[in-house]
Length: 385
Image (cartoon, rainbow, N blue to C red; front, side, top):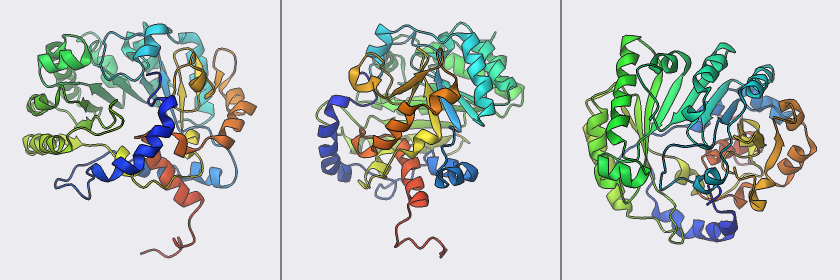
């Protein structure tokens, strides 16, 4: 698979949406309540950007997600970019990245996320880069497998990141090895413990999260993971069921998933750690797509090859189906040149969210902005209540 969704199967996926949407339990229909990241609330913190868009302007993204490298020291079975990162071992050049970060600051970007691609901490200058990014005045976050966190770098992490999210795809050694492809469960747990302990010692406000993609291979081990996590100063654990599988889009046992979620919630009841789910399916169930991808104007992506992508879910520059979504390259152009390019404006005109795959988290942003930018006549927005 070369992107978050298989471009070749888009039509099949769209046909599946109506068949499968009613089968997935949501927070309204499920017998347990589960908190979620609310992307719609986040976008409402930036009314000036929304106003600019409504006025016909093209605001530069609030957030940039940057793949520092395609190199990775894990081999996750669920990795959507495995094929891509096996053929592309690129890492961003630090000097060019620093120049583009300075430019992004002038373009009023607020947050920088270092993710993958591969494992961001594998980049040889990772710790220098997050320190530089913080010094520029950005809010900085990282998505990581946690394998490189250690006593000799944990202070740099805590002092320069606003948040860190660690992927832990299993609740014991066997399930972790089977899903994440390496025998490092005990090491990762020890690294999380180190991070949590140092957070307390420094009295830091860094937000530490754990995200687990729940698969048939690891689901039975998840309650054990929550037992372990509850001992640490962790802000949340997000359990994201594997909602799209290769068997023609059928969802695996949702009853078993719900039982696992209930068990995990009970384990965490006496702690401050929040249990989070996902909103992807809930948003897609509406099957009423916005006119365009508004999220493009609020979140941008820079790939390890230097490419600036229209969407964070499409990253393969060597695939003809996905390379057309790459707008420019930071080695050849400034961010302003890329953003104002004819290619970017052209894609903005023809891209339609109804051609995208299932479970795009941008749908939450798109649905909210569609209501604001193009409110229906029945909405009567000036009548509150």
